Structures are given as structure tokens and as C-alpha cells.
Image (cartoon, rainbow, N blue to C red; front, side):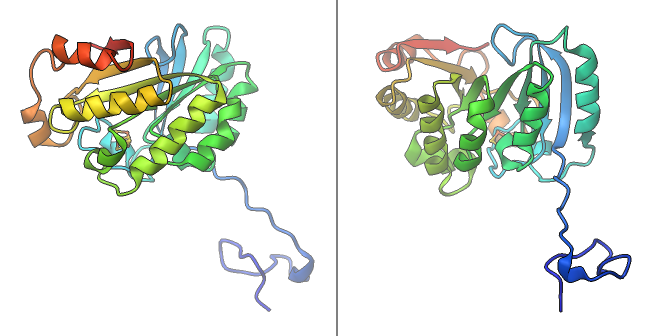
Amino acid sequence: MVPPYAFLDGSDMPDGTDSSVAVTVAPPLPLRVGGFVPFTTTDYPDALAAVVFCQGCPWRCAYCHNPHLQPPRGDAEDDFARILDWLSTRRRLLDAVVFSGGEPTAQAALGRAIDDVRAQGLLVGLHTGGAYPRRLASVLPRVDWVGFDVKAPGDAYSSVTSVDGSGRAALASLDLVLAAGVAYEVRTTVHPQLTPAAALMRLAGELASRGVIRWALQPFRPTGCADEALVAAAPRGATLDDALLTRLSARVPIIDVRG
Ligand code: SF4
């Protein structure tokens, strides 16, 4: 009889006992970490935070400035256990840990990692694009603040992410965040080719219809972007003129334009 599990070396019970009465539980996979920033004041509002960059993202945004975090495995991953050890020696200095990416909700280990951070008495922030609504729903009750990247109006999502169906997942996730009562920020990266004025206007309407009253707009940053054509097409200086901002703020009243 073939047992319902296998040891890594393909053997049955290592000591020759009856495998049919054995129960094996696979050890939980550790969080795959593609980078770590020990101190930042810009990734969690009004808090000194560390940022854990989670490896892996199912989307392929042309403007991504962390393309090395897209594959499920990285070339140089950090050890999350070591990060936890480090955090335990710094918790009097830090307020929060932010899980960023990549897409943190791509990993089943996220919930356990959040619990490990909370056990150290630290706040938990989550940066997400909402690619995995079910996993997001499972971790939201344990998250203190969400930075939600909304890419485009629903019907144009795949033009940014290059993945069909991404808009459906993202908007379902946004609705979960809004319903959870958790503190959040909604933000959008602006590039004239991917998010032209007409798309921003439609997105403003979608956000307003969901009750979003504050929206951060981040002009495209070429740093780290692997798409040379997109970098070449990026305007220098302001990418959002006052007339457009006035029209957008008629739908979402508070608009923060990030430098
Ligand atoms: S969702 Fe974020 S990490 Fe993933 S490809 Fe887009 S910009 Fe990069």
C-alpha cells in the first residue's frame, strides 16, 4: 500500500514500523523573504517600521520597481526566523512591521508570520494589490493598517498587471478592506501610458462609489523599472496637472499627490 505521504527521500517509515498508523504533519513552510529594511518612516503612517519584502507576485506590472520579487523564489532570500530574532532585540525601538512585496498574500505562510510579529507586541502593516482575496480575508483581522495599491479601473486592470481577471480579484479585495474597518490607504501609481486621465477619472468614480474619500497618487518612478519603453515615455516633472486634479477631487475629495 502506498502511504498518503512520502518522506523527502521517498522511503516509507524510517524505522520500519507500520506506516498505516503513522501520522506525519508537514512542517509549515517559512515565509520567503526577498528583502528587509530595518527602519523606515515612510511605509506605515506615523510609525517607525521595519519592512519585510515578500518574495513572489502573480502579476507583471510594467512599471514594477521590484521585478526581482516577482518570481516565487529569489536568488538571495533572507531568513524570516533571523528577522524575527532581530526584531526581538529592537522592539522597544520599532512600532510596526510592514509586509510588502512582491505580493505578501501570495504566500500561505503570511498568517503565521503576522502572528509571530504580533506576538512581539508590534503593529502589523500590509502592502497589497489584492491578488488573493481569500487569503487577504483570513489575515485582515490581524492587520492594523493596509496600504492598498489600486492599479486601474476594473475594466483596464489587465492593461497594467498583464493578467486577465486581476481586476475582479483586486476589487473584491478592496471591498474586503473597506468592510473590515481596518485603517487603510488607497494609492495608485500614475503613468500616462498605463493610467491616462480618462482611466483615472473612471477609477475615481469607482472609488467614490465605494465610499473612498482619500486617495494617494504616486507619479511613476523609473528606479528599478525594467521596461525601457515605459521609462522613456515617462514625463519629467509633474504628471498630474491642476485641471485633472480638480476633476478627480470632485469625485474623491482628498487627493494626496506624492513626490
Ligand atoms: S503587483 Fe506590485 S510587485 Fe507585483 S508586479 Fe505589480 S508592481 Fe510589481
